Amino acid sequence: MPSSKFDELLARLGTGRWNYLCFLAVAYWNMHLVPHTLAGAFLAPKVDYTCHLPEEGYTITSTLVNEADGSRSNDTNHCEYFAKSTDNGGGFVTHPCKSWVYDNSTYTSTITSEFDLICPYNYLRATYQSMYMFGTFVGAPLNGILSDRYGRKTMLSIGTTLFALIAIGSSWIPDFSAILVSRFLLGLLHPVVIQTGYILAMEVCEPRHRSVVGIILALPWAIATMLWGGVAYFIRDWRWLQTAVSLSGILISPVLWFMDESPRWLIVEGKFERANKVLRRAARWNKVTLPPQEELNALMRTIQGESAFAKQQAVQDQQETSGCRQKSLYYIKRLFILFRTPKLRKITIIVYLKFLLVNLVFYGLALNAVNYSADPFVYMVLGGLAEVPAYTVTAPIVAAFGRRVPSILLYLLSGASIFAVSFISPSLSWLVMTLAMVGKMCISAAFQLLYLYCTELFPTEVRLQALGSATIASRIGSMTSPFITELLGPLYPRAPSILFGISAFVAGIATIPLHETLGRPLPDTITELENPEIQEPEEPDEETEMSKLRA
Image (tube, rainbow, N blue to C red; front, top):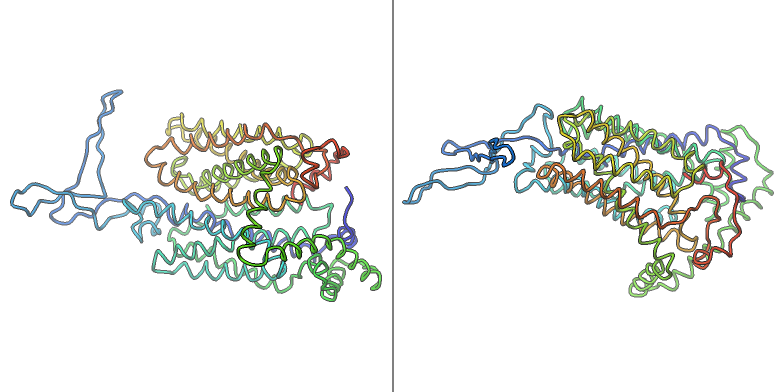
């Protein structure tokens, strides 16, 4: 595939200390996000409790009879208690419990126990986790706008600093409502920093190394998931645990001082003087020689010209959308473009569904330790370990076998593994854990592949719009998963496995109507998508295909 002029310039700069600084900084920050994304597992977990009865109170216990074998078991209501009635008629009346004694054998202090997120307020544990996802739901559309307008490094610096300060400060907030607000703010900053950081890393990466760098940037998420389980094992107090993992975010501040703005963004924005300084510094760090100044200036003007059409289109769009009403009508019209033609409509509906279901299953498995393992710390470590092969093996597989068939197989295998858990006795803990980890590995690989596949399915003129709106669907899935694991799971232990298994199955079946994109040129227009015979076939190149996975 033909490379752009800037890619040719990156190839001349090579890969050295200048690039490594950016890669390591972004990778480190990706690790920092994991404890907050999966905070509910250790900060607001399910905790056993008993009602602290007043002197005149009596425990409410019911006897349950198993109709199958006639066995009996006692069920104690720890949310209410009996007390003698003060009315003349006497007898007993039910009162809601006002104080509880918590089991501190696993955790010394949690948000659950400190703010009594139990009984009628049990749903607030799921809300705590979901509020972060709601923040990402709102923040995702802002990412592209802010990073394109103010620059990659600027947004990364502001975002990481605010994230670290809010994370540390919220560790000591005494009010639960304020904690929920801080969770929303952290979620709001999540996509701004992680996506901007990824864009910055790719924009300074030599084209031939993008597949490897893409994997390097994904692996810290898996590694941090394992570390999150390990750190939580040693620090059982939620405030100190959040403080400990949040303080590590400050360490990135000195690195940001030495990092440069994306030279690609500077050139596109016409900031040639700053771009020249960045490129000269990169050449000095990497010990290479740049073209003469006049040739470099001409090259920068050419690179800026490659984006001229896009900028003209953006100006035209801005003129057409002046005024609040005009903007609303314009964006509604743009959204419905995705449903205008038969093939595009089919792809859009399927992609929306897949994004929703994959996020539902991925985060559902990550947060479902209470149903899959007696040890939440081991479960989290093994969950991160399962993601390592998912992120490393995907690239060569899809380069050789395409996108469609591997996607279908990954979804179906994940669904079968998770669904099977619902029919296995909890006493076979090793088998339950094994199947859960197989499901986690497959859905993680499918998650990574989904972005590549969708990028190639949509034509250029609506690609960013399609992926941006699909991200909104994905956040709905991640917001829903905590309520399935935390509310539905304790009532019906098999329900999460059945729902997540079916969801993975549906995602796999929904992939069947899609076409294979390996070796096919990316469509630029909706017309080319609807009439693929007008495009020239493209011979697949393994290095190119692997690079596209993370580029």
